[in-house]
Image (tube, rainbow, N blue to C red; front, top):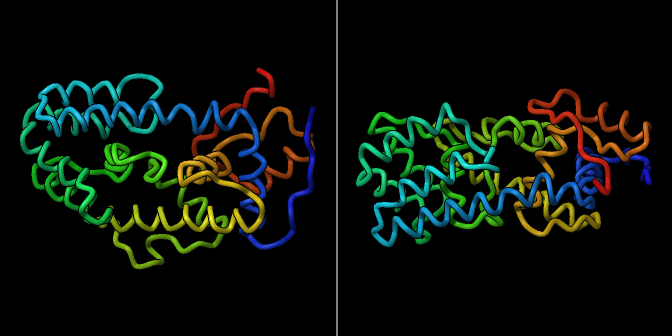
Length: 246
């Protein structure tokens, strides 16, 4: 049955979180947006555990974490040079990854130290792919980062962009921390409005859906039109969500 409710006319946060809540309460959200990311992250955890145990098989485990379905969190154009580095110089790559996975370091420093070593060896360290490797530290607390979707979410809520906050593009650790603060703001403001994000992964997934996906097939025509008008032009828009019960 279609569910219809008028979107609020309040603040930008009111409107953004309203649409987050509309998706968050559906089974499609769990199946098609949040749920598949967890086994992907678990494969990265497996590669991390192997590397820290001194098992050279970590390179193959990381390859499978990257290329096997259902991972869609990385770009093959960015991961191919990274994987080539892992295979050609596993000792240096392992040093960089140990820093990325060192929980005694601040998160900002982890990502920036990994990037510093990677770049010094001729391999770029895009924030999306670096945050993918950092999933090994726990995806619920450290979700994946995609700049386009997060820029759109910050625009929709009038949250300062990394640039407006004075964070340079090369400071990927600083940009990632800015992203985490945005997710924490989503969780806090959502709680005030009765929207129960379980963790940062819920918030990241909801931000992605609101900025990138079509409305649910089960929504009324009025709701679909309202959401399309609110959303504008998404970057990676999915054709449609499955109907409820499918």
